[in-house]
Image (spheres, rainbow, N blue to C red):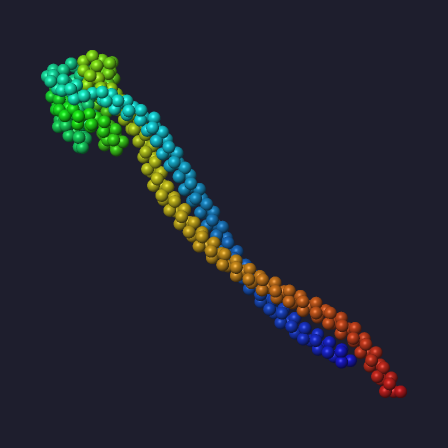
Length: 317
């Protein structure tokens, strides 16, 4: 009998524990569900921003590739033109001061020689860094070809400096200091069949060298001018790249911030789920204990009936 009463009391305690655990489990389920809702909303935001960040990253990567491709194309064009500069410089390499002094002594040089140096005068129009006292008006040479020899002699009064300036002309082209009009002004001259180093050499070594220089520097200028649109495209692409990179980095920073927030929420969610599972496991354990206890009470209950009948019989006897 005592064992039965003790077991019944234990069952009552377990039942009370189970009620408490059931309430706790429901509260933890609610907390976990609320956390899941918050996490789901934040993850949706992160997914959207991640997609946007990827779009901006892809844009920046494409622009960067375009810039590299354009730069490579420009450099390839310039590399291909470099031999022209070497040819132009080589044309001057064999000239000495005496060759120019001989020319300067002439008051009326051969027509082809005069035309050759007239072409050089055109190339130095409107270049402030090189002052040969060239008469010009509105960006053009203002002296006629037939009257230009005096100006040409003044230009080469210092032959060494004159050749140094010719050799430095590539730099002026590269720095875009040469007006396109200068080369436009000599196209008819260099197109003449007589404008060749071979023809000039029969009249003057200096004129032959300068003629060769003009022809090669003209070809180099054409290459540089033709690459200018590519250069401009490169500069624009660089600006676009800077803007795209800035936007990409901004998006990535925002994404990192959101991801950090999501990670914290996920930790809180995982902790809530762990607490919920712990409570559910404890409730299940209580239910198993209660089931076992109830079975024990039931078994002892039948014994209680027999004991009661036995006690009545003994009393009657």
